[in-house]
Length: 235
Image (cartoon, rainbow, N blue to C red; front, side):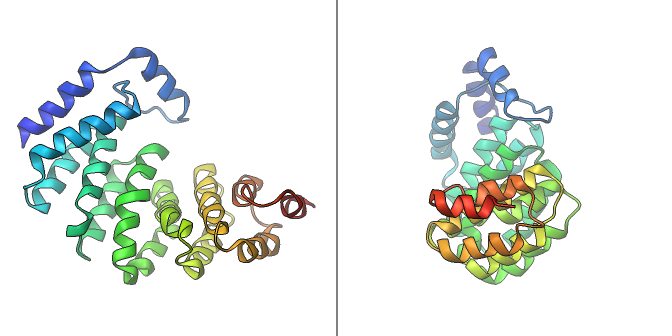
């Protein structure tokens, strides 16, 4: 296992660029650790190195993912998220606790949060919708990234028109959250839901706009026609 982790880190270091590192940090308010590697190269490293581990057990692959998360480097976390999603066909209900622990202990920026939740955790929830109740509990967490994760986990399902009732419940729980990362997260979720359910999302926004932060509102209505956006933004 240490061999593949070492290989990943050597590849990242070999492709590190100081300008990319500086540029990446500009997208995060928090101080985040970066090697300075472009996204396309990260995906290639993840794909190539996965070939070395694809026959390992799920437990072993998850252990490698956790080792990458522990490093604190955004690119290593990105590879961990890609690997976790690569084995989504092996997920089981108990994996929810693993994802929750990773988010709670290791995630410290929006990019790492979204990388894991949009794909691996989103795939998991589509496989095990009974776990939606547990996902909703994240909206009450003191950890801002678990609260954001509750929303961004449903980005892909929302785009497909799924889980609308649950999406509105999560958005309602997060409605007055003061953290802009959470506001952007649930606003994005509503925006994706509007692709298939424009009228329902519009009604939700109008009903709640007096209490909804403008950041979340703007995200939610971004894909709507100009006349609806104007109505939603009106005082």
